[in-house]
Image 1 (cartoon, rainbow, N blue to C red):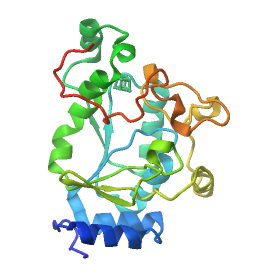
Image 2: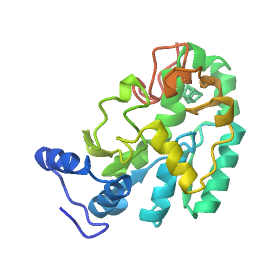
Image 3: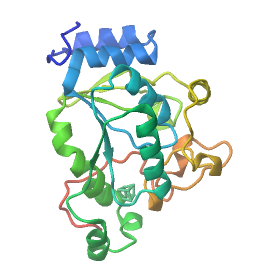
Image 4: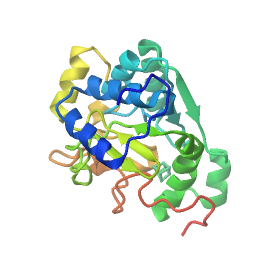
Amino acid sequence: MNAARGEPEALDAAELERASERLERASPAERLAFAVDTFGEGLLFTSSFGAQSGVLLHLWSRVAKDLPVVFIDTGFLFPETLAYRDALAERLGLDVRVVRPDIANADFVARWGDDVQRRDPDFCCGLNKVAPLAPLRAAARAWVSGLRRDQSRAREGVRVLERDGHLVRVHPLATLTKADVARYLAEHEIPEHPLVERRYLSIGCAPCTRPIAEGEDERAGRWAWTGKSECGLHARAPGDEPR
Ligand code: SF4
């Protein structure tokens, strides 16, 4: 199972299932180390540098420091997120690669209106999030992200390893709880995203994020006026016209 770092190794469905089952009992660092050993430079790591990102970024800095962290700058992000990204990158010594949409943000707004997110968030996400990542996603063999089962109903079934087309999705934090995350951040003195104290517990683009109320899912403040819950879930092909 352990390929030399950087050498591709295919996992068939049965091997993937066995590895995922075994990694259920492993620590997040061990899960990430498995992914680095197995997929090497074929491992894609995207981070939003949001409220829940500190744990995985810290682990990445320990286990996979030579590999880049990909950050998608949609042009609609909170300035606090950009400042947090820069501060954490410097503190943890991360190699952050910023990817952006082909169209400048001002041109996007001028062309489709400043309420396009309200009318058609899948179109906006498709052009500003999904499309910029597409070449990196196509070239990757596995994709690491910080999904956790306790974040929302939609994420309850997240596995440590999952097949997603040609990619293996890797979720080192799948079994962690909100309390585990808080404990880890405190233990390693990782600063919080500055908007957390205003009850933004899942932070994406400014037009599509609101603070959450007591008792709501962490992700309840994302696209709260729609049934949409994930940025790429319903995205259509970039280039379609918005509704
Ligand atoms: S989260 Fe909102 S602003 Fe950001 S890309 Fe998606 S729809 Fe557009």
